[in-house]
Length: 404
Image (tube, rainbow, N blue to C red; front, top):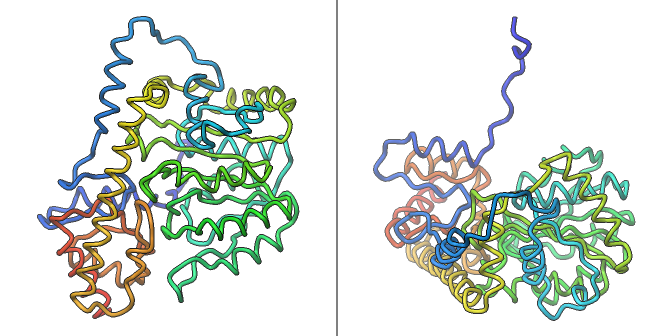
């Protein structure tokens, strides 16, 4: 008998299972609205033209080699990533109060943050939002936190933010509780606090001495402006809060398979930086040991060149504008079809996803009859909608909501 018999199967990872089912489906009408990746209006992956330019510069640079990077990553990338999050005029950067570490994707940033807070600050309680990215819970549980709880976020009645519930849950949290917050384009609800609401949230975080971990995966996708989307990060910094930023460069650079992320730890005292670095380096040594260079070189090339940086910002806006167009078109069609319910949340939500509010039977109906694949909770990737399939998807949603 094999040592490995009887393991059983792990739970299915939904978005990748949707992908598998989609590719196995032979229907000519099939639509994949599950996996969170940008698609152009032909439904194809889009390599940003500025990324092509940067890759050519990297490949043609004969001074580069394949030696190990520093454990904390490529310094030019670390610095540029932190500037992107906090702004070039940030006092945090000028006063050397931020430790920046290259990671293996946004997931790696979150895992390193969780490990550091657990191992070195001895935290054991994490709050995540209701209706969040499922891996938030998985990452912190795998790290060994015994208390993984939720704070209220989504209000199904208003199809918007439950600000009162959120503030109350933060107010009732124990001091130094770790709180995972989405910087912008919230995954799953696509619902973000307004600047004024962020001020209220930050005030409670500061008053209760909570430890914010800001998941920054979609910078630029919410408004189309990378600086506007960074508002919560810069607000926290200006208020003197100590916090962590887990950045991902998969979405806004289209570097999904390069697995490039960055963790920034903001401190009140620059004298803590070297100790924090040494502790994080030891954690990294035991997980991935050393980061890859290609994605980091590409992003550093773009962010550190004035012309390329502007091109990149324009291309991020192109992606954001296409998402906004698809929201407008979907909303118009649902209204014209007189689909039951109020569908204004199609327009008020932001970023890559649309949280429809559809029930599980309605989702199943859309998938089984129309071959449209979306998550069981009714989350749609708006990037995967096109001018060619929006009518078909709209009719499917209308029929599901009307009949189920």
